[in-house]
Image (cartoon, rainbow, N blue to C red):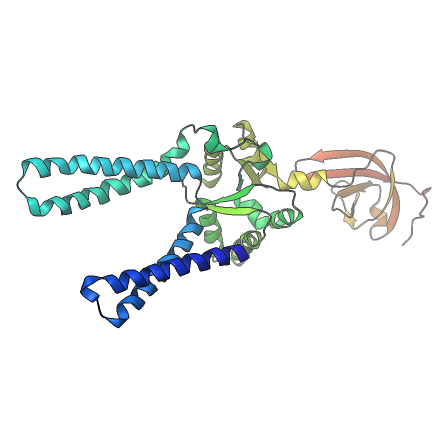
Length: 339
């Protein structure tokens, strides 16, 4: 922070002094006391504008900068060729410069935009791509994982590295949900926007908002296509999106899978103490929960609802919704059945 302030101060001083000298030496304003001060103010403004432009440019990938520059130069070259017949064969000397400026603006803009966007579609040299460290591949955030909110806590722990990318269409979907007339949807959308702001304020990860969009596709399909194009991972909670992305060869980071893998491991025959909260789906079953939220199904426990009991694990079932532990009551455990 101190270095940035120092560099900004030096740049501002140089531009202000240079502007003062330039303003005081302009022939038409020579002798005007305010000319130098006006030049100094303009120089200081240019310095501040340069610092703001730097903040924008450093977020743009190097491939996009090089592609935009090449496209701009190509567009200016085409503009020169387009204006050549007017210079050589038409006796319109007063229109030569305006026509060249006109063609330069059109073809220069087209070249700049197309060069920056199309550069991502071609293979780039290794020095532009950087080392291919799989851990640091960019990660595309899905709408579901942003609204879920656990991604912010995960970022704070430092387990995620690299760059988190929020595409324009995901941000647009979040805004659409936040503006919904339904109270619950509106609350979820606003929560998602708050989570993004919370992640952005952290120093561990960089968050980028990508302006790229893909027409005539739903959000999940756009994420898959964008991940293929950018060689990125997808961070999501959506089971169906995870399966589709994996079929396309995309690496998926599913927060639900991570949460399930961190739950306590239990083995058949292990004893535990649980409180039966409600009746299960099958007749006579009781339902309890472990501290990490794992569902425990107790056989023949209907009469013990609301009580703490000792149970023995009979089997463990892993489902797409999470882990389920099946148990049976053991009255011979260390802790007796009590109300």
